Image 1 (cartoon, rainbow, N blue to C red):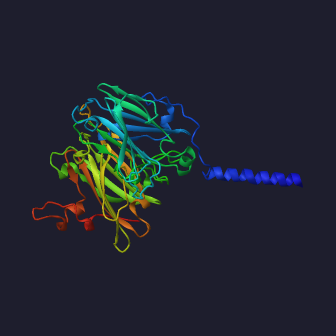
Image 2 (tube, rainbow, N blue to C red):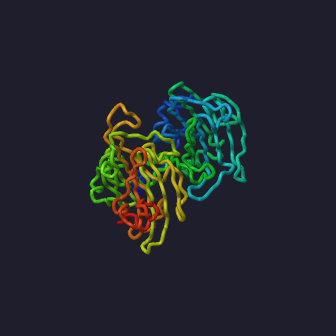
Image 3 (tube, rainbow, N blue to C red):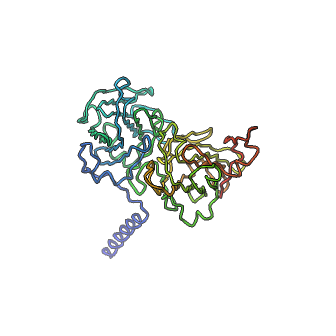
Length: 439
């Protein structure tokens, strides 16, 4: 009888473990160590278990990550065929990268810089600065010097490699202790906030968040099935690959379609179509453009002249009360800038979303003929401030653009006299007349 009870207890215990594993509830832990040598070369296998992030001016910066029980590694690679420095303007006017990390900031809580905010900047000559925030929201510069190698005592550990006419790469390692936390706290929280800035000499600086607002930085998840930057915790119900080839897209709302050649005489781009639909956990946006010349040569300032698109999203409840409003500009390099209008949630330049481009050709290469480009994006309802997707809805102006700013607006919108001035020019600023997307 006693043996039967023991067997029953063991059975129930094993069944609990099995159900826990099936439900994905078993907690993942950081490894004791990862095999990384901080030598400036981002080649170790450990860097590639978490999806990388492409950011910076014209998508020139690739960021990889690895973490263990001791701390976190950032591997940064920059493509730059003409590396340049400013002797008079210093580090911030030269080709440089900055990384800011905050392990205490709470997303969307309006947290400003504080003692938990760490900023490390370096340029191609080895000039660097290391600053930490204070209780008053100011930066305290701890160290400013010049070196291609740092041991990690007063600063994060760091190594820089510069290759003429190709670019540069660096590895930066923070211990959890330096960042004011521990491995166990990070495993429980499973999130750090970070920011990347990049300057290409004589080109606008690209910042993928507001440096003064750590709660709006990129969200990096280190453990679980949704590792990476800014991914919604609930996976999308379709494969986000930019191709719009799932069955659900056939019944999605068409928010814009037409032909660039018909709208703009002499334009080489062809047909385009944009769609959107409300899914189980968020809104899906998609576009495909026939384009024989994929061009996006401009930096963040004039990025609106590149092949790309702009989303103007106004969220309303069933009574028409505004809930949020956003403007997001994307070109072929990714999100370039945003504006969160009254009522909107705090948002970084990298939206809290999963998106992917499908590039059929080569960008900024006139030696071949391209076919086109596609894009898909999944944004969770919470990021759009949608609490009831059955009754809340959006008004969406999805402007699709070819090179040199031939922006195609939806036909129903551009032909509406209410949106035109006395000269016939169409204003974009009448959201009440935007196409509607809802369940």
